[in-house]
Amino acid sequence: MSCISEQLDEIQERIRRAAIAAGRHPDSVKLIAVSKTFPADAVLQAFKAGQKCFGESRLQEAAPKIGLLPEGLDWHFIGRVQSNKVRKILPLFGSIHAVDSLKLAKYTDGVAGDLGVAPKAFLQVNIAGEVTKGGFAPEDLDRSIEELRFLKHLKIVGLMTIPPAVEEAGQSRVWFRKLRELRDEIVAKHSIGLPDLSMGMSGDFEIAIEEGATHVRVGSAIFGMRDYKISGELG
Ligand SMILES: *Cc1c(COP(=O)(O)O)cnc(C)c1O
Image (cartoon, rainbow, N blue to C red; front, side):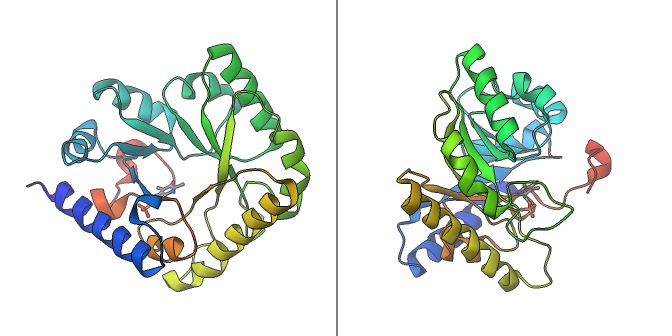
């Protein structure tokens, strides 16, 4: 058994336990294995171990990788979306996690129409109001949702956030909770469905699950430490 398949089993088991402890069904949490900076071979090992859902954050890196892998994998684009890349991102990725503005959402909807695809989309929320981070301000989301709900091709399934860097995982809980509460408020006020919450990474996914995450994005805990020098990615 490869190391990746063992790590994957362990993460799946931790997800299962966290869900049950929170009184949730284990199948209500989807694991996105974040394979950025890791080669196609690592993805293939995970796929052979039963993992179908993968996350990538840069088109330049992901496109050739996806081309090397079997069809039928469920690819999630988790990185920042530049509008000049949307036309290339949509044919490869069924889900987009970081739709960070009304303008980008409308543009992506138009491109999806041109291409005849209907991607799932998460709205990225800058939940802690960090000046360095993109995303909808929580107070703007309410206003934007009235336009977003009428998009024809992009299916808005929920919210996503990357909380501020913290020293201990437990400190992220407040942000995960705020994202869930924001979602609940919007759903109640606008009578729309926003079932999904994309939140939680290697260091804090169990806490995110306790707070309602439906999609956890886990990279290093499955594939190991990333070497950004290889991929040329910053940060
Ligand atoms: C890289 C990345 C992850 C995975 O981070 P790990 O700490 O390795 O689990 C999750 N979400 C986003 C948006 C990322 O860019």
